[in-house]
Length: 311
Length: 175
Image 1 (cartoon, rainbow over the protein chains, first blue to last red):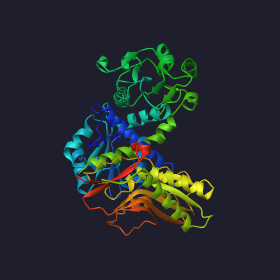
Image 2 (cartoon, each protein chain N blue to C red):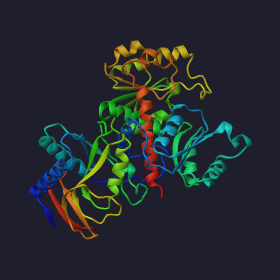
Image 3 (cartoon, chains in turn purple, green):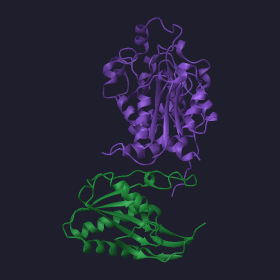
């Protein structure tokens, strides 16, 4: 009988310090919840009576709704907090907001914020479990977990896979978390994009770097396209959208030169026609919608696991 | 201390199969669902036997009750969550839950909660390879392979070839 691995993390702040075993444990747990999501009644009583607050200071379609649905399927109660409709507009601080919600009795906070380190700050300030749903340019751990879960479900394992992450790496918390998750699971990661969008000191990360997508695409088993985040770019990192798309867009033509069974993933939302052509996004190699479906199972696993570690 | 060897385990499962067949009409629509880990293998053996004796295939599935346990938030417990596998219709059928050891009755309660998520069975029956008494819930087995008198500080350790390489039942002192 296998050794019983005990989950001890009360929070999910990022994947940088995760062991391979911990990541695989989350993915194995997500398998169980994938089965629940196939049932007619997609509900289990595991988190009955627990209160989960979705605290989103940035807009979100996938992550927020995914956490809501995941919490509901675990029979938890969900409180939706949106910055725009809250007392933040009256000048209330983040910590005061969190402490006030905690005084109402909450168990888990799922937080997305534009400042890096927000989730960590909260974890030191209140008693609830904290799940990082994206903090500035730092990490977006549940996105990376669902990305590797999707790849694993399709291929069995990430060991030895060549994975390319393409786009605005410097400003991507998804890229950062994926670098950690994918390399810890044995994949070889190549960051691809214009030099203006590569993080400084990228050589310190356990990855390869390429500024030429055409040079590397035929070697890739998985290609992870990132959105160009116009809302975040203060500078002009490339001359025009058209030029970016010409050099780094995932087009039909580039797909012809890629491996036949290359997997295409994207965290969403997509700029169709910019970083990815519609025919590719909707094509047979794309697992983009599976990512979203798998996101529910992975977030159920994360919510469940952090709640088991809380005392 | 060894209490059942390989032949005795086979005999106990055969006994349960006969009890089941004697209690139903020959055409009763039955399906087997094994509980947690070892109940799965006992369930598979039982389903195979029933299938041979009744001359028709018997649906067999399994339930992982981790998400339905009443001690799910006990910080001392190390939970190993597995997957429930019930691919057949449970509506209007007699579902036979199978466990290796029936003790407090809590596992059976959890298993029933899981099965009824899949539909409305006509009936749920419980088959236990070993009944060691000391129930904490008002649950009794309908079919029993073997009764054991066991002290509260003792554990009934079931080993099965499918997962442990050998068939035996031992009573050991708990830590």
